[in-house]
Image (cartoon, rainbow, N blue to C red; front, side, top):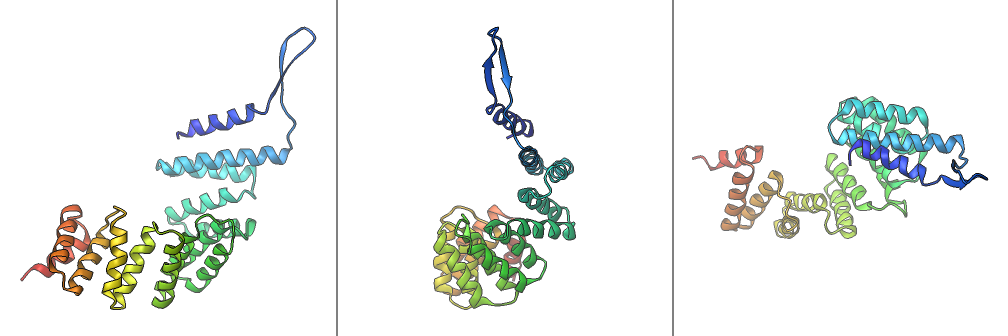
Length: 262
């Protein structure tokens, strides 16, 4: 949806609350419903946050930041604006500002799964694994959190950062239990099992990932390695050919080319 359409939608929603009446001369008049100043500020913050998201999706990060700054001027306690601002700052490499907004979102909504998952993922990406894991635990404790599998997947990735393969495997399995179509969890589970020399079970999870139709260089290289370890030369060759045809310039394709040279 274009930014101007988002704004138009907000305007239409506002007009939907108007009341049209007639006076003694049968003249149509429009009476605006009474709203509190706080409600008006929250609506303005919401609209500017939505605009900021759309501009960010379109790659116009400068305008997106302007809209998000405006949103927080209208309502400094609007948590979604802090979350989107955090994502934007992280994207442009301003990590201290990103962390500030991620933490503020959690302060405003301490029990919300999304806010805790976002902060946990950020902390893990910046090397603070133990602290990050504590926020994933809060995220999955939210009974209204709609995507707990995402938090479990991020928890598994965080545990891999400290070489806790057993803990990572358990988290990836929980993610898959909650969402069998979670491709990242399926791929990571296959990888952990392969690293633990359990190529047979690794292959089962990679096949489930492959069935989703989302090939990546990492997944195809892992498929080649798993099949090679199992002694399935034809299957390994098939993965090699897919990797070289679909992602010929990838690091993984170059790695296989190097091993194939005499």
